[in-house]
Length: 574
Ligand code: HC1
Ligand code: SF4
Image 1: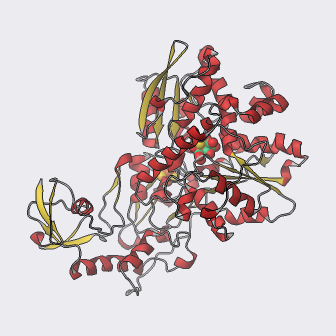
Image 2: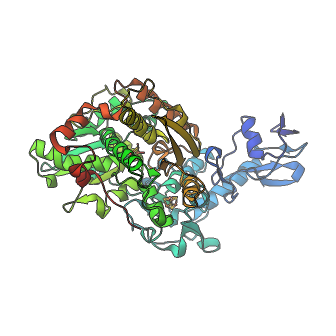
């Protein structure tokens, strides 16, 4: 331990920590911009490039960046001296001097960390009119827009992409004034091996990286009298969207969400959770088939479009392990454009399916040619939680005070198993609830498989089913997925089933969720909320969903049968 003083306050703190960490312990805020410490997922961006955290450390006789300077015994630090405050202001003023001056129209308006800092530091004029770079925006993909003119070179995206997600898409380009973080040789992102996981977007402090915005297209569809517009909401939305309306983190707002969507004018408000229950019927059948008939194991649960791209680009030799099931929202879209269209007497071409997802990669997934049917998309438009929040605000809806409503039927009913899809470990737990009962013929006494739960990036567990011990591997975050897949590829580990979610925490930590601004506790609270919602449900196993059963009786026939294969399964290519 060492003894230091911060703004005259004596403190005893562990040796080796930084001034920034010591100040946090003392309850003294030192503003930062490039710095980001998400230690739960081992994402530490410590580039010290923005110089916003400058403090006076007289023992050192200079201004030092608090984020990388370690405390030493006897150090007397001032964060509130005019010298420190002026240095911090100047760092932000310099950043603003060559930053596009377009806050009014910027997609990050009021969510930009640079903008908030300018406010916090009381900056009232941009003193210098610096030269500005002027590169075209990269609008090559359906998922992510890169506007490098807004890059402040904090390198958070680079750390996230390369060290946490291990994708290696982003790195520093150019020197000095012209430097920015971009794809190799600044190629359009669509030509790179980007998975569209969106985690770079989640940590970008400005609007250098944002999702492609489809809100206008959704408004146009809603206002087109010739279109029947169906909306579905992913499991993870209901425990996160309340944050955009200043509700307590982890509040479950399912009923308010449905009311808001109905007031916005959607013709039918359905639940992706129905699609998740349907996915489990097919996926559980597939796993049992693979186990009983000695087919390829492990089976990787379907769901996450970013891992599909990750496997295609990085582990093509393992392309046989993913389940052939489409992801739940795509299955759902398929059922809307077939079964539901027939029931309602609608031409599928007149139906617009909108998915509200915590995920940016789903935007690109919906456009994959193998997931379209008869030349039309199964899902037409994907918007993120943030985009839906913006639309609700545009519509003038007082979200926090809305009454609750129920989803429409027949595609709005769901079980607790589908709710937990939104967290790491949830998809495989939902599958195991069904596999267990189908393989043993016995009813589960306890539906919660706690050995599959947690937030750690890489986990494994064993589940005993009729004397057969199923080995299960779970990874969240693509770096952990890489470790899991390498151990399988190299024959070091053998699993029967694995679950991979590209985003740390699973979909609750998706790139389209409300920004957590470096507070990972937010993701943990969303996870707890999903488990609460599961416990609140009357039905907790996917095969008990009465509307899913009816769908098979009326339309699909046998689970994992021919029609189900034609409509609900797909294939991936090396
Ligand atoms: Fe997910 Fe899924 S759970 S992928 O995490 O399988 O995005 O929430 O909608 O499709 O159901 C995301 C969440 C979501 C799908 C489901
Ligand atoms: Fe990397 Fe994911 Fe961002 Fe693509 S979306 S650049 S893979 S972090």
